[in-house]
Length: 352
Length: 163
Image (cartoon, rainbow over all chains, first blue to last red; front, side):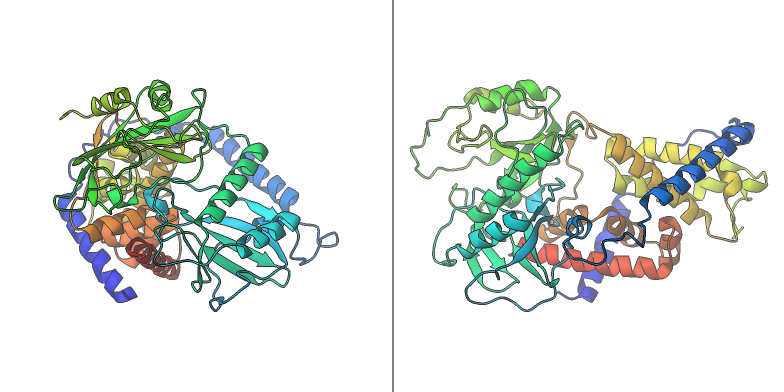
């Protein structure tokens, strides 16, 4: 699809949205008798403005690099590495071994638009020096992708990885568009989901150690499409003491779509609800059983599906299904949900 | 004053001046914050516009652009400040229709805030580039470049979804 087609599609979508949202239902307060706060406090405003100007001047002085002492354009300065560009390099696909060249000086995880259906802001961290080199070794050890193999689809890798070299060259490794698949520069494909997952967990751990989270978690949005509801990396293990925000999602699977767990069901978000007591819900979710009630056999999905989307203080996401045979890795190991959890989640939705 | 109510900076009626722009302000707030916060954002924007009405200069831009820029500011503040943005039980606000529309809406949600603002103003509010530029407080060329960049990212994201 070219730019013109997308332009037409957006124009059409926007027109339809405007027709559904006339924006005429807002009733403003009356402003005719209001005090004019800004006019009545001119000196306060002036003082505030002066303080802002002073702060900007001081900030500018503090942040402006001293040209004489500048470390110069060396590519290895922390500042340059921290700004390692996440844009996809405009380079030719890499084919054949090794997967990536030796000598990487920095690597960065980059969030991707869409992000597996979640609105989470992915952690973006940087590996440098020996860690980046080691990462390149791990990438070079990835087995080739076998298009006939079933890699399963329980975990996606919704981010890209960019490697940077001393000469400024960058190599872009794309996370799984399909489960298990990793491609390099849009070219050769490798079975590298596990490698990237491990990397993600390492970087997440590194980020958590370096930057303890201070903000309360924000309730996540449910993905709109059922097909985007694969679990993502991160937030593991979550314990009963973890501070989390939890959103419950209700999906209706499409009539006629294959509804067995090993097949690709389709469906859409029907309702979502922020869980008002996330700590209690988390305790119930963590209290699942390690025993698979389906003994590893295929199982049918009910037409209405309930999920919990759990976000911790770092912004990482975990998915918990209430399907009895669908395990979550919330606690770090596979746990199958209890009937109590299914009942508690179902109660959040009025028509159930 | 472009055929509209008298300029409030000259003592005109603020209510009458702002009224024609309320639907656009409300729509923009709908695009930028959860439904539960929409009215608060519009009301906060109106209060701010009222307080700052003396700074509006009709020679430098249209009332619509000036007011929408304030709505965008208030929405940004609201997004930063809000810890629990959704109602306890809320029906999904996404339009239910074709798979393609869902993909597109979802991809738009994944854009950077400035790119999303450009898409919302231009396509969803149906504004011209000049008014978008006023609302985004940037040059028209920047709006065009931002739209182009956003469409490219949407294109990639849609390919990703299809993949």
